[in-house]
Image (cartoon, rainbow, N blue to C red; front, side, top):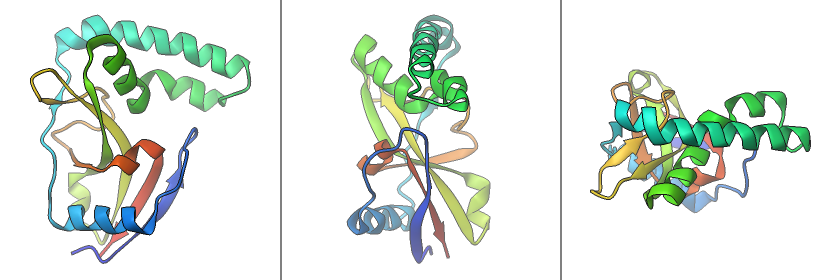
Amino acid sequence: MYVNIEHYNSNEGSSGEITEKDLSEILDILNSEKYMQREAASQELDDSILQEIRSELENQADELFSQGNISALGKLIYPQNCHSLAKKMQEKRGWTSVFGYVFYKEDLAKTQIVLYSHSITRDEYGTLVELTIRFPPDSCHFIEHESGQRGIDLRAWR
């Protein structure tokens, strides 16, 4: 059972704050093991619309970098950013963004885990779809919580 949770890292572009109420709710979800089942994006989806979206995001990253709004690292990772990908899928396909946190399944055996702020999408059939390759469903759990959209990673420990 996890007994404490705290702010771990604010990612580039993070906004807002995580409240004590948010932390308490996330801890409850984590301890109740209410993990959301999700599927990796299909190769067909990856080859079509996701490639197009990543190209658009690369162009946006170039523009943001030239304006001084993101760092060189931010420019590099922007086209793979889960929040950006989910937002674009919402615009292009009408899919719903689902916010929360991911963590590696193998970390459950440790005394502390890092919960990474993350976004996935819900398609027109209600299936949760992972759009990134960084947190594959077979090696990471996902928990849903609105505060995941803020770009703030958390740490929980036993």
